[in-house]
Length: 401
Image 1: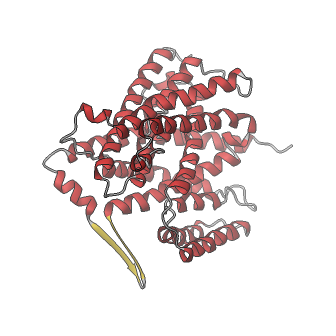
Image 2: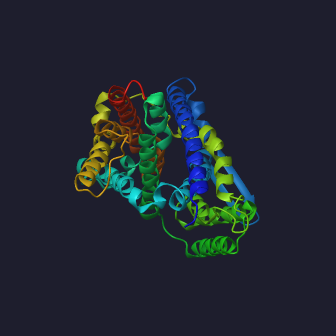
């Protein structure tokens, strides 16, 4: 029987590094969102909006890409974030928590419940309005950086098993969000561009099967894949996921050569401290003029906020209770029911992924819904963060020993 000690140790070390970076990155993420709100509601508002409306053009021969800066961030830089998601998913499937089928049931089922119930809450409130129903997936997401950032504020009182469970649920949730984007937010398709997408994917799989471990060929083909997807009508950020899933975990000839981990570690600080905060700063700037507490009672923000705060905890905790009660899964030994419930509340922090899905759901011509959906995301995520922190602060032991 093969010795799994080394892979398990590597996976644990990678996860600890991930948790450290994501926790600190979550705090930076919050600061970026606060700065965006200040900028959008100050004398700098005109400059703030003009900055992200700035046209940026890239032209190589007949290839002409021109978008406002906001879309370069949302379609381009966020593809790098999704590349990291793809790398993490592959590592978790091959060596991490999802490698053991006995450990995968609880987080995957909880993630599914934590997506379906918030979507049902939103749909219940917004049914009959076709425009608003485009946002049904907005409260389905969990922001792992923000959630781990809040969890880190509780220090060593938080058992590692609770962090691992939250991470596993959020990773499975990311996979669900990827599927939602691919299925529900695909525009009119270009067959010519899709043919290039197919060729690029074939090339990525081919060099993987040939044992190529240098990252440069993968990244070059990945850039072609991103452009092709951008022109195809399928959202371009999915190129990052596809690229991440084709990068080899380790070399067949030299176990010390691990391209996936090399790229994952290289990307983490740039994404945690650069790309995600920039995305938050570009997308969280909600002009509050003309808004009131009554605005939160409008169907779109109400559906999002209730989906995040109520739907998430009901979906995740309810699924966990059902599975554990039926004997289909086990509750981690270090995690009490009260801790599990507090973690379920924290999963209602949607923020980054919710903002991203909201930007896909509502077009620029729906300016009112663009603003209202951000109001719902920010208020719901903030409330989930405060409630989750308060519940866990009371539930966690004062002395971890």
